Image 1 (cartoon, rainbow, N blue to C red):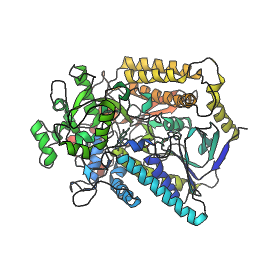
Image 2: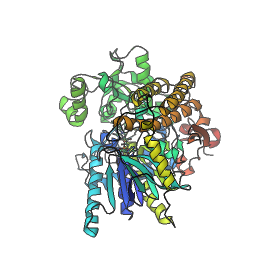
Image 3: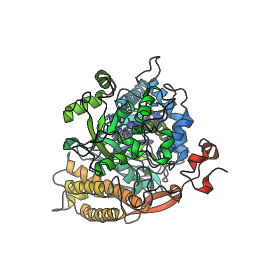
Image 4: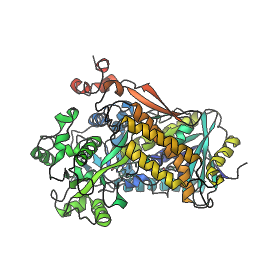
Length: 624
Ligand code: FAD
């Protein structure tokens, strides 16, 4: 029997970003003993890096805003492929979640009359992002952590133990989920520092592990984004949807090489920054697609007037959804109108006074000064697309966040459906809060419904331990770093922003080669803090996720949102009705099948003009 540390909880939440913390708060408030496990330090989740803000139709900056407008914008941004029920819940509940954060202690920027300030972002009709300068994610995490401490203080008063009902296990990586029959029974992992194994026995697990960006070479994502939750869910029998849709954020740093991919927040454009090519031309006017033409300005004058008078002018095309802007930048660079380092110019210096830039965009000012020796108050930035977000993720029930596996829930970036083929900026932070809370509630209700607690099968624990130690067992194999670099390059080059059938076939060939190489890779040294071993374990997950992305991308013969096919450049109303569902076969290979989208409810369809719906839906789907 494997030697390990054992814990028992009602709900185990894997991930301590916004989704995980909100889920854990809810589960604990519903009276469940809850553990939060994270492989990073507590407080260092991806959510901390979120800059621009959290989208919620509070109507503070423009009283015309409401959940219906937010719902419409979200569906348009996702090109109508979104799970409409998730988009509806999200738009309806986001304002309450932001106001609730204030009750936890969040200090948002204010309007002159003292309400929560809201800023413009791409694809949002009205200023909608509640924010704290360009450090919103930090405030969100700070506040959620503060709430956790306050709950722990309540528990101390009641039991004498701060951690009686809510405990954080940081720097602990989960490598496998365990089941009793069909249902979840726990999670198996290891302490990163000591390498020792740890078992969490629990009838409900909430995955809140974030995204997959580390499978791509140029990315805004940090080291934790290795698709662990996606792969854990699949190995446990759950399904993933929308995996072909990867968001390439239009503006990442392109220079110097060591920082290539680091995000340049969309707030720069929301606050007035414009994109120019090497000829000094504001090129986005050339790239407004038909579906958005009515809502975007045709001249620079009109676009500039919009910042002061949004009710009587149309939006600047720099604020189109991210997929459109990323493709436009890609085309300009390909046409030879790029900057010296292969990007385009993003200029805010000629648009706002220096003191306003440093007040509104302090992190960007600091980032460019420190990393590129560029003063953004005096000169333009060089920017280009970077892999930023995965729209695909665990297929969940919209109301409860439960996957197809009883007891397994998912929320935040690891869950799929909400954002369709393309996420609007700011809609992730609100997604974390809305669906984090729902996942915590779903998990608590599920635990209450159980007659018996599922049991851990010791043979599964032994198998998880054997799998985790496998990279130490072989000698003379390749090290994981080389394979990781090649995987990132292959995904970047062959399944990147513009996709072609032959390149994706080639990618699948490379991925199958990586699969055999990964089976034979070795790591040196001991289990005590061993980054090579950590990467070896993460690499299995990155490979599974990459296979999902490449196979689904090859299968979807259309271009939509974060999936652009050179060989199928148009959107197809027939493909919009289809979901590509990824599951694991018995031999561990990824199998992609088609499923039908559930048609949108009539009252939600009525929120759109029929002429607009015609651009996305088939004849039969249109309202009578
Ligand atoms: P995360 O916050 O990433 O948390 C994941 C957690 O899971 C971490 O604690 C990690 O340690 C843990 N974990 C992962 N795998 C394991 C494992 N195997 N075992 C244990 N723990 C594990 N969105 C917006 O809406 N507005 C913005 O302004 C915005 N700005 C952004 C700026 C940047 C630079 C980036 C990269 C993203 C931005 N986003 C923004 C997107 C948004 O930040 C993320 O989508 C969101 O924070 C994801 O939150 P999460 O809770 O799902 O996951």
